[in-house]
Amino acid sequence: MIVVGNGESRKDINLTNLKNIVGCNALHRDYCVDHLICVDRRCVLEALNSPNCINTKIYTRPEWLGHFNHSNLLPVPALPYDGELRQDDPFQWGSGGFALVLAAQLSDRVDIIGFDLWSNSKHVNNVYKDSDNYSKANSHSVDPSYWIYQVSKVFSSHPDKYFTLYNVEGWQMPDSWRLANVNFKTVDMFQQ
Image (cartoon, rainbow, N blue to C red; front, side, top):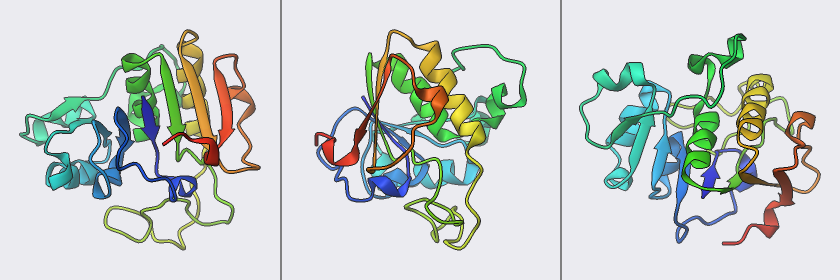
């Protein structure tokens, strides 16, 4: 299973012939994927109207299912743990975290690309910046602390699953992700 985020580290990876992809938000603009996580209502509407999503299972927040009438729409999976912090509230989770939860339910091995977390500048790091439903390129980068915490919860809640993160040379994996079931490889090692 491959989970594809929208960080700029994935911009040179061709996903056209790959199968078993869980994608995030606007990935459907460029590829047909098996599963697409959209927790922003505008992204859900865009995906539902995309010709690339005819056979895609699209997942969104359970409380939003009633706003859309579409047979391909499903609720995001439940979190694999219980917690009391604000970042444990499912409404505080983004598409990337839910994509990892789904992938861990579907496969014992999960490859992860495009989860950059931070930018090399002060500005947003996203391949879809400056397009509909996304920030402007000169917008300030997002604080990744919730993403880091939530992804670490996915990894630690699935000790029997094997996760491989692919990113650029020099990318620093958060300390909380350094677990026995998590590996890092440079993006050029991603097998297409």
